[in-house]
Length: 122
Length: 280
Image (cartoon, rainbow over all chains, first blue to last red; front, side):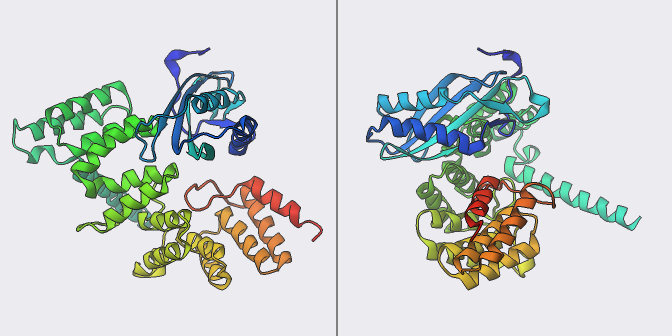
């Protein structure tokens, strides 16, 4: 999945998504709305992943947290929904010319209130 | 020649400030007793910052510093930074919590910054209120330097739904400066948006205008002037402000956006607003 393991970019400003932040939110919120499940969870779920040189996500790791960003458990179905949403984001674009063609590490932080998405931060 | 000399002194001043901040944060290794755990840890730390932040070499040297002197708050803090920047929040926060526990005066604001960044507003307020109640609390800015953390606390109150408290906080900060010229690039913008959201339109107008006088390139302020004009029924002015915002987003005039802390706007939002107003 990864194009060149030895040259991974960690910059927070090198990668963008087709349609911007709004593009990311639209895709994720749509998946959450379709699910229409109620989860008993307040807190955060962080999603860290790699975006390869073709703009596709992979090697996803997710972690549920409380409001102080320390570990706490979340319902498995909610974790699965976060996994599914992040893997649906397959149109990443490199905006720093020097990093074109390189793999990137990326994260999204889901703020969740009563099982619903309150915000997604980067 | 005169310009050259001034530039040189500015450079010297900048360097001096950087140097002194760096020393005060890490501690001056030479001032510590030779052979002491503090001295040894300090030297590990000094080596660590010669490597790229977040590199394995740098992180391992911070580990050594912490192993020798677990009471070394700065090493915990420095080790936490790359984790927080890369979204490994639990790992980063666990490390940073140690720094805060050891030296709250130095690290509470930095922790509050991360809580704010990810919209954990109750935690952010708790840290900042604790900080400003401490003896010896001094003025700290966001890591980028653009906002006084007391302004961040004000914005944070607004996110928690306490608009009046937010306005009072931001006003208090602005009036604490020797003159209004000392205000930061987003202080009046923030105050204006808070007034606008609170329905205090005259006060909003005054603050947003002051913001434009100081920082006319910031496209978001033009957008909020348009929102204010809409609220007060002046659609013609609203369209003009939106057009002004748009040319600053598009670079036709010098302009920028993307400052994430004080109620950010995007080009898309402005375009949609303009469309809504067409024909009205």
